[in-house]
Length: 58
Image (cartoon, rainbow, N blue to C red; front, side):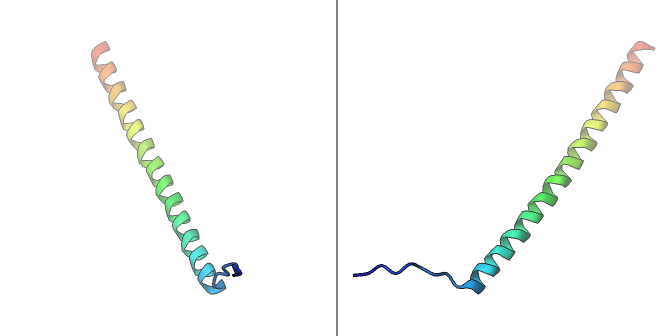
């Protein structure tokens, strides 16, 4: 009884790697878009705080 090593289909490997690469790029884009949303929300909060503080001090 000999165990022959499994040799994957090279075309299937290429397809899988291509899909993984695409998924990785999409996740990176989503992460960058999320960072942009967080930045805009933080900026909005800072502006609201500033307006509130200016109202109180006047």
